[in-house]
Image (cartoon, rainbow, N blue to C red; front, side, top):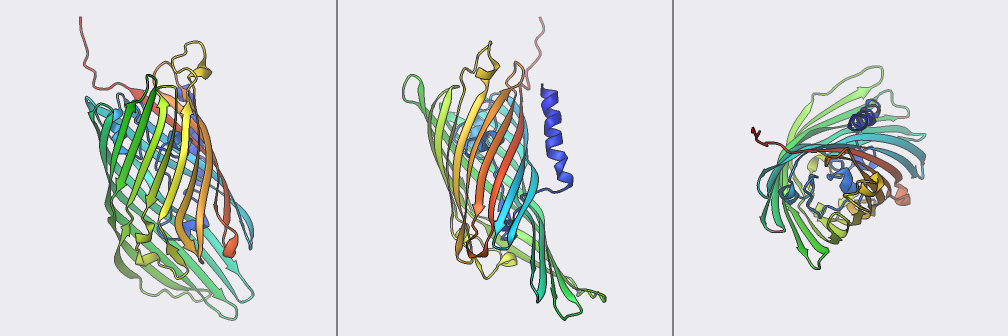
Length: 407
């Protein structure tokens, strides 16, 4: 079973990547690209909530969750997204595939855990053309930021955990534009490349308390301080046509701010049976500064995100029915991204559901998520996106550092 799912996951992630990869969207043209969801497939199938600490799953959003680990957990996941685009200029489709995360988490002492991994933070992937009787324009972009992170979590009192994550952000973004005017022999091509790097931090808190014999109340909080990122920017301008001429490359170093954010969550449930919760996130994107990507028709407000979701397990310890041991998940999310183009705010929503598939007699599992959503609008000559996303993950658990015993 595990070998078959590994093969399926490998084919799912690698086969389409040769054609196209990243978060393909015209809205990734702005800023440093679209922010990727930084949680697991399990989280995404519940609308993105990350309130719970789990003894056999890592929590990529809230580092306090590492304090709940009781087994070593290796997990990787990916997603494939099919998008339909519609605007005043016409319609189109695209497909993108991502390897979303690779992570190893493990307990290091009683009530203490740690982990490390790699996740994509932002994605830039677009190709926009504009043709009239007077001129032709083409804009293309590719790249994004990645996060290599180390996390730590500690349960310092029964049911209360704290945690911290340190991340090194790195990557590059390449943007290319070409313009050809009618009656002009030569066109102009401009290529901008930014190599970006910097450090950021994240703090987390989780709490759970029994309120009846069966019911538990859960709460969580996360805070990410504002951080400074450096960019080495190269600009190359050349002519396009029969006589090609390239001007000397311009190199400029700039610093910009990644905005602070906080998240609050609250939920209720019965251990190993069911859970439902709500979560709110505010990202101070109005503080975003980056002179490399400033545009006249673009402004930023604060990003607000609302999520609700949960899971249900018919009978987690059933020995007669595989279906009763499966985890059934569902959720909803709504986001005001803070991005304003031509005076219109770009919003997004998604409806998701998924299942967790036990693998063998151990605690390992496979997870599948499905999400339908929309981003943007056709107003003000903008683009509306309808997307369908499928996520797959593998979560392998084992007990490490166990001393051998001899009789």
